[in-house]
Image (cartoon, rainbow, N blue to C red):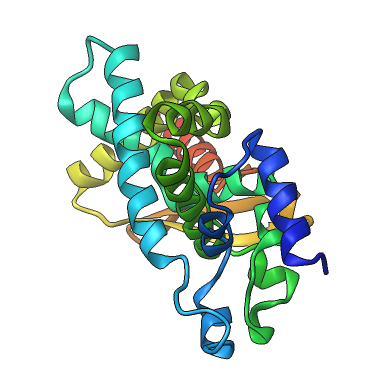
Length: 231
């Protein structure tokens, strides 16, 4: 495992930034499990920075969507933002920069499977964004965040299509007075190349299956298959 100093340098290089207060970056990489096992070494985990980063991400993504889609109403903008800032999306952004390998975690959480959990990665991503904001200010942090979320921000048309397929199936289920469930039935591949298989069930009837690199993509493909079966 790399030394903490090496980890900080690596993350700075990935972010193309040099922190004025490297303690903020160290804090952003400190999971609560590490604090629990090293109370004499550290007094705080990254949870407060996570809170700040979460708020900052909402503002920046909201601003980007507001400018990019002048004709969308509040509801549509909110939907797009929730898709971008959801746990899975932020975790994927964290994986692209290999953030998990730089986290300080307790012994029980050091396994690669724990480091690759969506919840841990998305929380760490938010914490790092919060640290960049405090250390570098709004403008630099905004530019950095947009670069980190480039993939999500530039696939908004795909997200709209995903919304349409799932929305149409939801409307069908409501008209029929039936429940609608998406179940992940399989996960294949290594952590950074996971592929999900999802089944969609309307009422008690299996309606379709979908595969995708993201759960949302797999759900969308399942919804499309279900819509083809209905029509």
